[in-house]
Amino acid sequence: MEYSIEEHKHRFAAWAAGRAASVNGCRFPVEEGKTILEKAGMKELIYGPDRLPLPKDIDIMHREWRSRIIKAAANYPFTHGVAAKLINIYLKACFVCAGYDEHERVRALHPPIDSLLLKELSERHIGGRRAIWDEAIGIRWSKFSSDQYEKVITNIRQAMGDAPLWEVEKYWRGYQKRVR
Image (tube, rainbow, N blue to C red; front, side):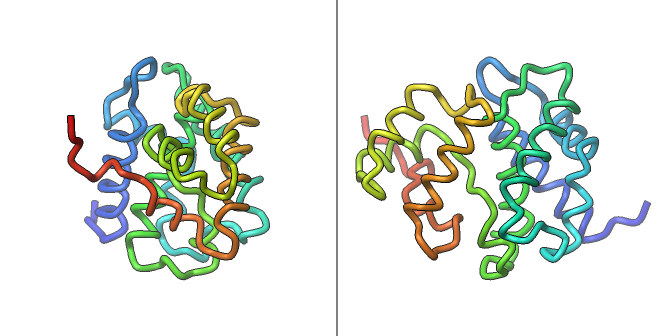
């Protein structure tokens, strides 16, 4: 097998996504995350951002991707929240952080959702939507149904206006040292 930059990118993105999405109640090895992504057809996207859906179609395609991930992960209790985290980290590594951040299709990609992001959105009352963020915190991202996940994404999109969706991560504080 030839080792290409696409394979290199896929391995890294799958590792990062597997680490981020494996949570209490749905633990799986990173190798399994890579296999799930491959079975769901996600690897076919890494060859360039033009393979991503048009911005107007991203939500419909994301729902399809989540369904494929959940089906491919039949041995694990994947929710739409866990499937979304696997997808979103994978695509973030493949495109957002790979220099395609201003591509129209990449700007529309869903950001990874977690409790740290939701908490900061609530504390800062981003978009005037504290009640939405608090509701999502109460549900827990890893327990999201399809509708609950999509409600959060819709509200992020509305709160961000014309900015790329990945920019909401300026509120994510997971990279900071925690003060106790």
